[in-house]
Image (cartoon, rainbow, N blue to C red):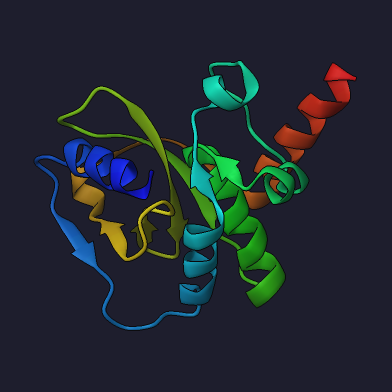
Length: 147
């Protein structure tokens, strides 16, 4: 399944320049943990919905997620393990119609589903940005409404 994500990501970034991080930033261990503990799956396959934002507890029990789930897990672990906050950005590739969720930490835009992959800001269009607190609130609020 990781191979499919890699192929999908390569297709998505056609026309975009991609950088790979060579030094080890403070979030490197979190990135590796998310990469190796979460398996990709669509919300439709997992939850029977087009879009579903998992809570950290749901992610820890299923270990499967789409791009927003990867971001939620990354941001949750980043805060718990380092005390730092990041953001989730919903982006659109200029050469591809689909929207995608990535992580923003400072001025670095990284792909939580592919370890080491970062994006140049000039190669992506940011549609929305959510802080960790906003993601957690939305996911938790939706669960409360549904019950």
